Length: 183
Image 1 (tube, one colour):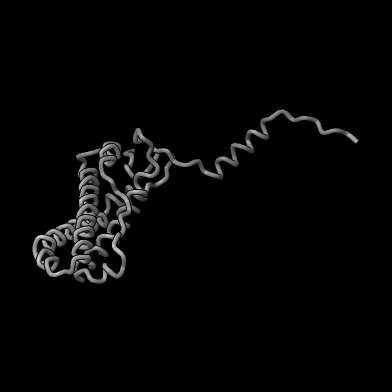
Image 2 (cartoon, rainbow, N blue to C red):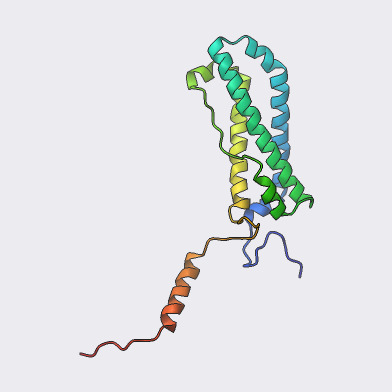
């Protein structure tokens, strides 16, 4: 019988790994790469022109938020490419977990205050919002895939509360019985 890569030895399904290899991941991959492309086009074109028209505080916020946006999208693109390499058989999940350590996939919010942010070009604000939602989805998927893996890439599932109680019952039943005092 062929072992599915989505089933663990204890016969549980790894939803994260299943999702990462599904058509939904392909859609997420395309969406992520499309956002990266749209942001690059905007920042190199219209965004550059719009930034020159901003007052000084907004121009500084534009520079900060566009750098954070670029960093966020580079992390997202790196993560997506790594998962695609796993899906295409170029890397094992364990190799991907080791490589993933180089990617600083973390929540990166907006640092500008809302008044200054409101003076940024609407298209930049939209792209920031899109990237933040995409980042949240990818961080969630990353946790589903990798949270149960230890450093060696082996499954390290948390102990089942039911299994723990069953073991305690077995231990209690196997223990020597001490006669209860008689009255």
